[in-house]
Image 1 (tube, rainbow, N blue to C red):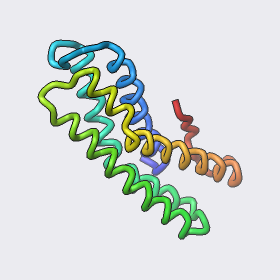
Image 2: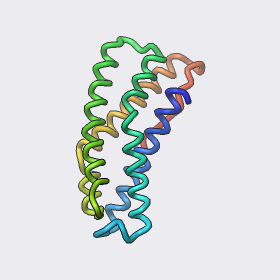
Image 3: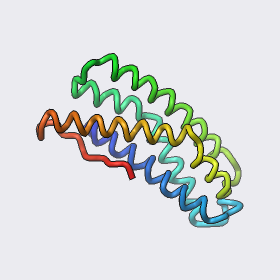
Length: 148
């Protein structure tokens, strides 16, 4: 799997989870254990956690593969992405550790600046990689990944 396909797969998992959480929060459920959507929520949240775990490394590999410069600017932002990812992961894993997940709990997770910051970081990097693709022409195969 190329660096770019790995990034797209990881981003899709995170975005799919976020979109589902928005719908789950609106359902007004007190407990995830008694609903099909609760089971799906845990599955998607687990996938998002797994995807986020390797996201900074995937973006690092992509920036190296493209030999983006100035290198230090990219490295500095990858450091920010690592920190933001760690914070979002802490919040998502805390929610997953709960014996029951209510719609209100998910609404609070959706509102978390840590989760939103991670999504914004991803959108920023995707836009930059898209610009780099355009500058390099069709030879640079970066899948088009647009924020939802």
